[in-house]
Image (tube, rainbow over the protein chains, first blue to last red):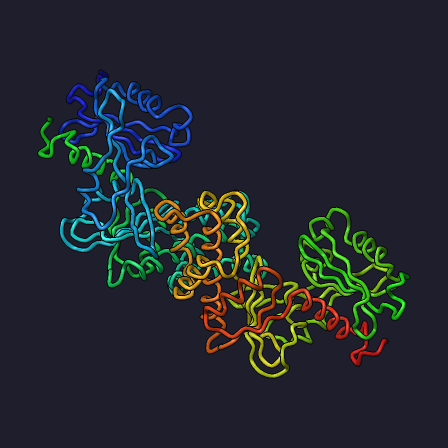
Length: 319
Length: 319
């Protein structure tokens, strides 16, 4: 055991295991973080190297004991992952979702994967995997109605009522930005390596405001970015800001229409640059914003999942 | 001269010269088509081989006289083309647009390129190049208000009032379909080679109807196609029909909101499979449809442009 653990012994290892990356923590019986590790061996790499091999490599590097139990969330639990952790249907209380973690068979350790969520509506089918754990770690109140925005490649908006997921939707905003910037006619407008967009960029703000007034209709304005390059001398970096503002503003307008009737504030679960852009855009939409760091939320959610699955004690005492 | 011209002599050559393809016709002084030729040497190829070389090759193959004048529309008149034919600003009468063709300097022949259109609105900049000629050949009445839909990679919707373009917009529907099918997560849903979508496919019709009710918001439903594959066993061909219905329905809802206030019918300028899909979708939107074949419209528009530029007589007699 490494000197870093001197004050406490790990009770569980927690992993956020996504498509392209993973993060791992050692947690003591009271829910305290003892060690952290990051890797780029997400689902894609792990399918080649073997999930157990990748996991054991990271645990060994952190000096984890041989029989330490492991709790995992994210795409490692998908059909293409290590073991499909069946979806839990919504509506469902967050605690019940976390508590239904699926055990990976044939392993010496107790390894469990948090299930994803499925919304089995005929006209609005949807799924999430990983965000349910972030959501559980976002510190939402046990009572009341919360609209939660979790931006990313596939942004999720979730309506939580009295600690239960009532419904959700997905807006592929990050993916649209990447795909349009790289493969559509807008690549001529944005250039090969668009700079990061700043939340105070006036083009970001103006296009965001316009999109907020359009109820989620963004396709009618995409080509205008190209036309603005031809007619208004719009430069590449500002073109990226226009596209970002248009897509984020469109997402907010659309999500509000679908899930946010009457909402005056939003819980934003985000980190880094994305947090800044969404804070600005939600502000332009006239919504109050409480920001929860996404990295901290997933870690807190995994600790909660370890508790719900009896891997560490609910009371905070080591089991 | 080939035997096909026995009854008449060509007065002008007309070319629809796009990014990847061209079509050429020999026209007599009365506006009659004497010969037709198609090539895949559009702007991209012509930039390498030289526009004059490509043009002369096609004209020689059709047996065109050495000094036959030429009228051209399309991307050959763009900044990346042979000669930039400056945009005409809207609003503008269609005749005035065609009549402003730019002459290519330094050529033995009289070669002119029809200008594109520019909408210089601060919040809705837009351009078209090639569609203005289709529009002029669509047989629109000289009086009255017409909403014209010209679907394609970048669909154009044009409001024409008393024979003048009042305004227009672009929806990159065809490009969104291609780019999302090839590069987004939906490639897993649609498979590598999506089959053509039939207008009576029930998935096309249902997703189109849903989109028509959403005011142009399509981004909120893109991921649902992926989720329907996971939760509802949606198959690849039907996934392509969903995406097509969603994007076309969204385009119509959005265009109607922007340009079609009060419109009860639409002039659809389209050919082939696209004509069938848009006829079905416009019908689902409750709009009357008059379809004009897009290939015939551009040819008729080029003949009209030859007339407006004095290359053939307005009266129909050879000059």
